[in-house]
Amino acid sequence: METDKKILVVGGAGYIGGLTVDTLISKGFNVTVYDNLLYEERYLKPINFINGDIRETDKVIAAAQDCGVVVMLAALVGDPACAVNPQLTQEINTDPIRDICKKLPTSKRVIFMSTCSVYGAQDETLNEESKTNPLSVYAATKLASEKFVLDRGGLVFRLGTVFGLGDTYSRLRMDLVVNVLTMRAMKYGEININGGDQWRPIIAVKDIARYISEACQTEKDGIYILSKENVVIRELGERVASLVPGTKINYTEISFQDSRNYKVDNSKSLNAFQYDPKISVEQEVARMLNIFSEGRVKDPEDKAYHNGSYLSYIQDCK
Image (cartoon, rainbow, N blue to C red; front, top):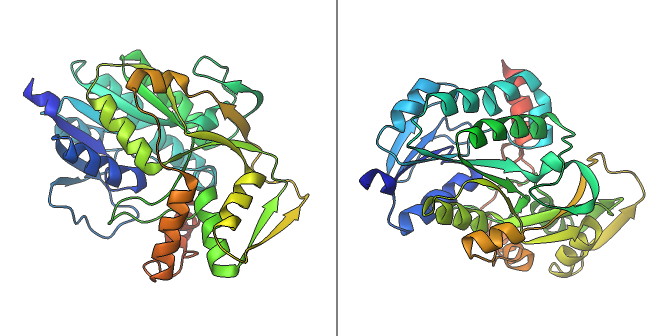
C-alpha cells in the first residue's frame, strides 16, 4: 500500500532521529517528523514537520493517519536524565506509549526504541530471551513500554550504548561513554577510568539508523538486540587514548556509580536483517576529533550536550 512508504518518526529531531530520518529518505520513504524540540531551537530540514509533545497522544495518532509505520524515538533518555524527575519520566516514556498503542489502528506498524539497560547487571552473555533486571527509572520505564508495543505485534529494538556523530542538525550527545572519553582526551589530554571492568555493548548511531530503515521494509516483530561489539570500559578508554596522541589515562579503583554490567548476543538481529554493523569506535572517534578541532562544538561540556544536566537546568528554571 502507498501508506507503507509514509513513515512517522516521533522524536525525529533527536540524536538518533536525525540520522534515521536521513536514512529513510535516502531509501525513498515519505517521512513526517513529530518532535517537541526539547534540545533544539527550530527544525531546519525541508520535510514535513509537526511540533508536538508525545504526551499529546491524540495529536500523534492524527499525525500517523496516513502513515503505515510509526517509529517511536521520543523519550527522556539515560539514567541521569530520568533520575531528575521519575514521575515526568513515567509520563513521557511509558504512559504515552501505552495510550498510543491502544489507540493506533492495528494496521499500522510500531517500531520502538528500548535499551539493553533493561538487563541491569548480569555476568552471562544475554539474548532476547534472557531475564531482565532494570536498575534505573530509565530502564524500568522502557521495559514497561516494551510490553505495550509487543502486545500489538510491534517491533522492539534494545539498543546498546550509542556512540558517534548524528546528522548535521542534531546536537552531539556528550553523556555517552565513547563520546565523553573522546572529548576529554581532546580537551584535557587525559581521561579518568573509575573501576573500568564493566562490560557494555556499543553501537554507532549511524548503524542504528540503518537497522530502523531495514525494519521499516519488513513485517518483523518481537525483540531484537542492536550492538556491534561488547567492550570493557577500561579497554575502551585505551582504544580512545591511542587515537589522541599524548593522552594520559588515570586509573582509579573508585567504584563507578553506574552499576550496569552486561554483555549481549546480537546474532538474532544479524540474521533477521542481514545487516552487520559497520561503524567502528575508531571511525567515529576520528570524526569527533575533526569537529572538535574545527571548533564546530564550542564547549562540549555545556549542559546542552548532556541530557541529565540540561533537564536539571530546565527544572531549576521553573
